[in-house]
Length: 318
Image (tube, rainbow, N blue to C red; front, side, top):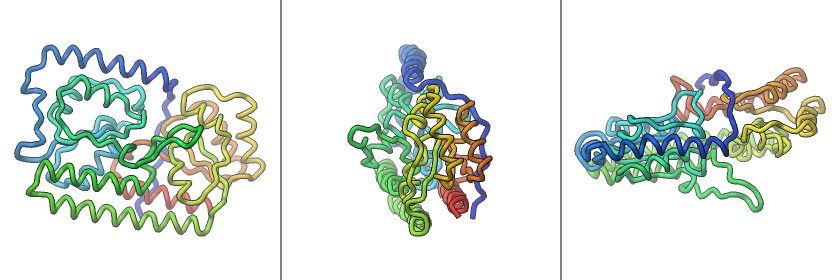
């Protein structure tokens, strides 16, 4: 079993609404300026020429999946791999634009998570095939609610992405189509194994209560049959970078003293005084804390990362 990823150094996350506007503006300025002075050869797509297929991914999660499916036939550039980088405030640079212009395939999360990719693509002359993980997943916002865009924690969605990625790579390199298909099949088999482990958790712990700091891992928790007891106002405020109302904070802290939850699933990449207070309350009351992250920890692949998280969740629930 791959080792559980250690919690990463926390970093504050400002308000996402402001970041999306500021991030898009910051990305647009250098991109538009560069578009005026860049030569056509800089932005020429390379996805249809010989050699490895250039693949650009918004985060290293999708970059790793691309390497798994493409093997030696892809050259992957992941824009975000540093846990200190927030996709909602990521600012594009010259190298990003050049990579997009040369890409044969682009993988973005979509759903508002990495809007900088849309901004960059509009400002570039990229002819790449763009794979939007949220659209591929078919996930939509529930009635009266908001979309949970963190689809990389939804194993069936990653199986759908693997098929679409295999097809996109085969289009760029028809001679290697069989290899891409075989790699995708092997990847999906490993996902099925993980789904089996999640099903085992559901069989043993369906209905158990858990708390979260953000909705990042919700797809995985729901698949395990776990019940999210966290006040929606708490996780929403944390995700948006807002202060949590005192009453909501008290209600959240009460989950641990009242033994209403068996685990706290904590986004280790974003932290502040209120999430730290919640983490402390969990530990003080003997409630296990399961760290999750938004980017792939160094030295791990996607399957190992998910396996470690599932194992940690099972240990916490037991």
